[in-house]
Image (cartoon, rainbow over all chains, first blue to last red; front, top):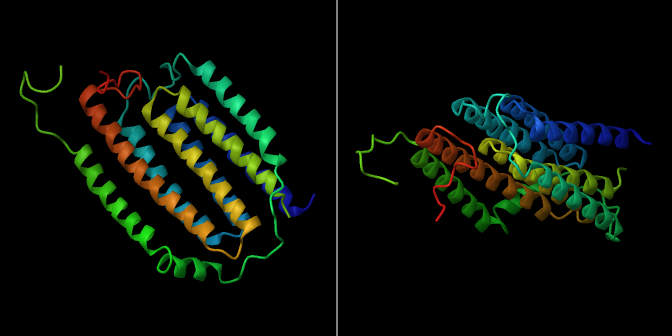
Length: 174
Length: 102
C-alpha cells in the first residue's frame, strides 16, 4: 500500500464515520460539528485529487459559511428537537436505514463493474488558471446565471426570514 | 496512485449516509445536513472522474464549482425557511410542518 492510498483510506474513514455520526447523533449541535469534520474530509479528498482550488473553495464555502449558517440555525431553533432527550428519528427510521443500505449495496455492485477509460495523463500545472479562464470564456453564461442565483437566494432569504408584523386575529391560515 | 473505484465507493457510501439522514431525521436542520452530505458525495464523484478521465479539461472542476454555488444558495434559502416556520409554529419537526398539505 502506497502512502497515498494510506492517506486516502484515513480521510475516507474520517469522512464516513463523522458523516455517520452526523446523521445519527441525538444532539443537533454535535451533529453540526460532525458535519464540519466530514466536510473537512471531503476537502482533503479534493486536495488528493489535485484539485487545489476546489479544496480551498470547499473549505471557505462549506466549512466557513454553510457550517456556520447551520450552527446558527441549530441555535436559533432551540426546542425539544435540539435536545438529546426528544425523539430525533421519525417512525420510518428503520425503513430508511434499509433503503439506504440497499442503495449502497446496489451501488457497490454496479460501480466497480464498468471499464472506465482511465488515462494516465497528469494534471497540467496551470489547471487553476485554465479553470479561471474558462469561467469567463466558454462558461460565462452559467457563471452569470450563478451570480444571479446567489443574488436571488440572498434577497429571498432576507425576505423569508425577516420579522413579520403581528398578524391581526382572524387573518391568515386556519 | 489511488484507484478510481475507491473514490466512487467512498462517495457512494457518503451519499447513502446522506439519504439516511434525509429520510430518518425529524429535525428540519438535520434533513438539510443530509442534503449537504449528498451534494458533497456527488462533488467527490465529479472531481474523481475529472482527475482520472479528463484532467486537462477544466469542465469537470467548473461543474463541481457550480454545484458548490447551488448548494450554498440551497442552504441559505432552506435555513431561512426553517427559521421562518420556527417563528410561526415554535417547532421545526418535519412531521408538523404541513402548511402545504391539502
